Length: 190
Image (cartoon, rainbow, N blue to C red; front, side, top):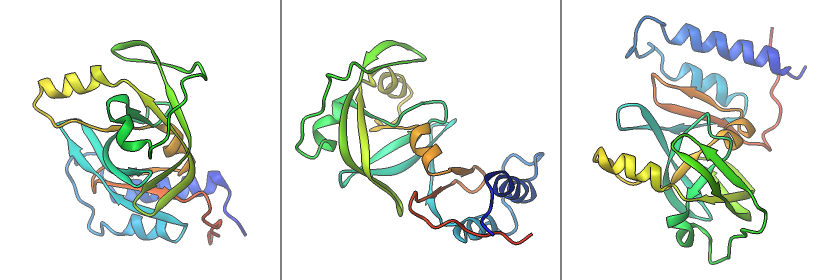
C-alpha cells in the first residue's frame, strides 16, 4: 500500500528525532547511515553539504552541466543564480527578462529576475531536466560574504527545488536528501 504523505512525514520525523538528541549540538548519531538508508529505500539521493561561514550550508549544484556552489536557503522561494555568472550557466542561450518577475528579500529592494526555461539541474543524482533557471543580482549577498573573507557563491538553492525534491536536511551529518520527481512511490510497512 503506498505511503501517504502524513505517515511518511511522521516516520521521517521519528527517524530524525531518534538519530539526533536535541540537547547535543554537535552529536553524531551512532549509525549515521540509518537515515540515509531509510530515505534511499524511498527513492531519495544523499548529497553532501558543507559549512559556508559559521551559519550557512552549501551544496554543489550543476546547471546546464556547469558546477557551482549554492547556499541552501529554505526561506528563498526560488533557486537563483547570481546574474554576474549568467553567461557561465546559460548554456549559450539568452535569458528572458520580459516576464516582469521581481524578487524581494532581506537587504534588497525589488530586483528584476531573468528566466531561462528548459535548463538542466543536477544535485548529486537528483535531476530536473526541465528546470527554469532564474538569474538575479546577488551583489548585496556577495558583498556581505566578501567582507567576512568568504569565497563567492554562485547562487541560492531555494524552496522550489527543496519542495519538489521533498528535501530532508540532516544537519548533524551535513547531508541533504532529495527525492527525484520521477522516483516510484515507496510502500511503508506499519
